[in-house]
Length: 109
Image 1 (cartoon, rainbow, N blue to C red):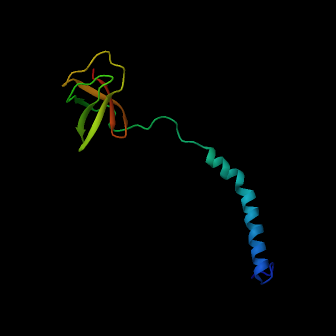
Image 2 (spheres, rainbow, N blue to C red):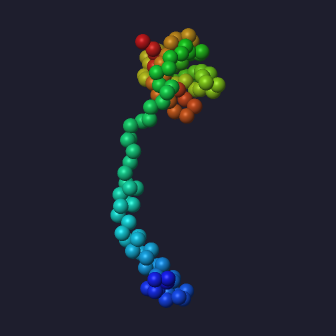
Image 3 (cartoon, helix red, strand yellow):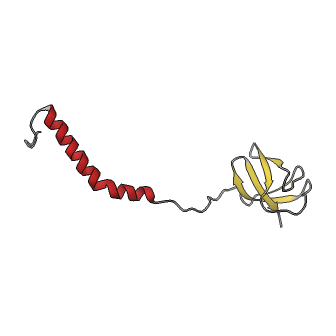
């Protein structure tokens, strides 16, 4: 309006705004769509808990869940790998993966 390209009235202002918005949308549609289709690395994020070793406080089997208090939180402990028999209390295990509230373990070597 200040440059004299558009008349000083509401109708002209709304129409010019609509035209400018349509041009910008048409120009940026494809680049923005491509940004949406990009994904991060699909690999599972690494946790600082992976590799931590501790002694079981109760028996653990593929069907039985144990628990362990670590970092002030009571974690559910599950077998992260198939184990043929029950691991007795006191067995040293290593964390192989982590989910919310659950540590998946394997016998430490």
